[in-house]
Image (cartoon, rainbow, N blue to C red; front, side, top):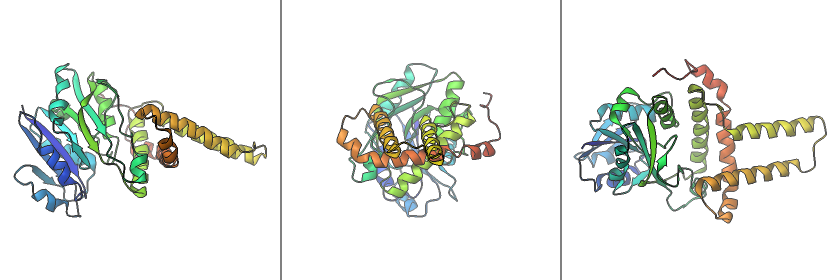
Length: 321
């Protein structure tokens, strides 16, 4: 049974070879095709892709069109019963495809499967900060959403439901999961389908990614009328800031209130991160806390761009399916 693997790539000459080598050494007994959509790379990525000419299908966008456009182009070119996606900064396990399609036998109403996303050994501070960011679940079960670097769809569902191309950088898989659930489909997490995702390793890359995640998540929530539109943490931080400013204006501030606010946010965020990753390494949490807090604030700032989303959207209600 044919499976299509779609890999969008943009300026990843330093990593795309490792990604493709892992995808091409699958122990899957059936047939599968690998479709790479080069999104206008300018760094030599195209030259690396030529090394795999006989093993993969490559489509090159003339200009940089964004992640979702590239994923949709891969769907258009696909021929498999299932369409699997991974990212160009991932390495997949040898049994990835075999495991990823197993849950589809559970139910005909299962349209989406997501797998486990492991972290590499952290080599930079920002890789350590991002550790556990891709956590979905600890065991096989139905979930509300999955993550884009390790996911698979029934092709018949994708032909009727494409990724929202206004979401160029993040959140497109969440948007499509919301649409699947509105149509009565189910989503499953399968822990045995594993990939390793190499995170942003620089300060600039981590900041840009956090802002895009916050921006896109609020957009998706507003588009699909998911309340609250913004993250609870955004509301909390806004309330704290307004409270502190108001007290200062009226000269009734409490001594050490900034320290109290910082300590409270530390306890809140540390508890959240540990619950997501299952980590009990207290020292690591303390070391990475400043980075977590900074990225969280940037994520919240992205959330606060909500008025601009309303201007971008042509509709504020879910599409009628």
